[in-house]
Length: 317
Image: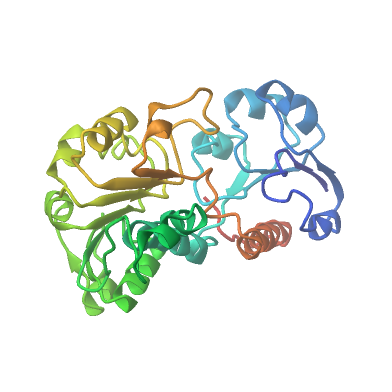
């Protein structure tokens, strides 16, 4: 089997191993691949492993040997699934590999806003504590999480894990979901309409896929509904939050803050106005990048391919 990994650098910049894939056949690994190079690099491939490379009718017509596409992610909008099926190509993804990493990232943001550890550490280092004359000194308001409400948009595996951590902090959990979540209800989490979630939550965390229905789900109308002390968190996909409306909400103080691990264009091709605000945290899509998380992802992607070679359907889309 000829296996080609088209964009492996972010998943494995050198601290992990591709040996499992190499044991299955002839392996070629590229750190990244431009759209112009996809066909040339894939022309001998029986199996392609991709993360962000887009594949559709043009590529499938030019790659008659291709029988398998393994997506090293949960989302699969980068592949034209209908066309892949028509060409007899099996497509797999890796669900739920990043649950703990993303949930922990959500709470790193929440604690950053509630406890202001970094800001106060910086003040100590610049001498403000030693000059204040008091044994205890703070410049930013601090809040407890106990009794605060978190609203979770999308109650899949990540949303559920966020809810469990929130519950351990003594937070009240409400959520919206496209389907019934009896386990969430059993745990005491309350299903509410989106408008109520927005209007009553202190922290709002987004965990829904980017689709035509969810694009710009959080727009000016929704931001105006939120509490003035609310913090909006998006670790799902850029595009769910309208960034122009968010800038307006933050700069005009409709809401207290926001934290984004995803934006509409990654990496950004220009300096965004959001970067100039002091009440937003923006990280470069890192919630899934802990070594443990990436190891889990590579192992799961390998299991998908091994299952395919054995005629077993595993995580087939």
